[in-house]
Length: 304
Image 1 (cartoon, helix red, strand yellow):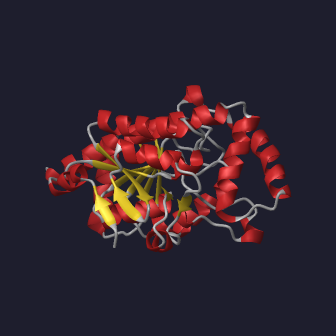
Image 2 (cartoon, rainbow, N blue to C red):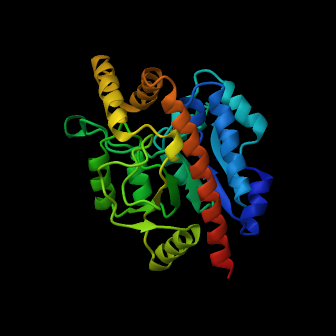
């Protein structure tokens, strides 16, 4: 298998240093150029400022790389016709020596397989709107149910059916916890009508929860829901109006599967006058920062 692990990451794993996995679908499909690369680099800086080591994961010419260098990130950000790589695509991408960004599902799988314990992203995938007819459910949910990581996200992407996503997470046994909040964040909106039964207020509490999960032998992730900073958010009611307008356009074009989310995000950025991009950047960086603090607390907890 063509896998390359950055020497810095190998050393950190060997010495049990705090590490945070970062996905690259946001680099290849989630944000426009040059905001995509600027944001990923800012996420890495946020992880480092919290005392942890960023490990950004992606695929270049069939080589799975854990710990992409800045040059490799620039290469991936500038390539045309790159793939959005979920778990199902991963073996074909490797065999055909293609390039692309890894989704939450693929990143979580690779991170856990090679010993990382914490992952930061913007928002997880979920149950898509209209899934009762299309059965369109993100593979992120299945992978989180069988991968014991701590995942920091601002809830699920707002284009999902948030209520059904929460129900699915519960059914699959994934622990969902609000960070200093008791409502499920709606990605660009810091709150939603959907309540969370559990909340934690410090990275140390989250780390202790993750370690307790491991001691219990539970196999699912702990999903930490970190709301977008208030100053950058789009209020929930405004967001729902924007989403309804975009949804009509996307449905009219009969887009399905993995192509839905990138198109939805692009149209939402246009209709919101760029507000969604500002919110996305803000939440990505803050999620990376919190993940760094959690990774540090987990490492301290394991070594104490």
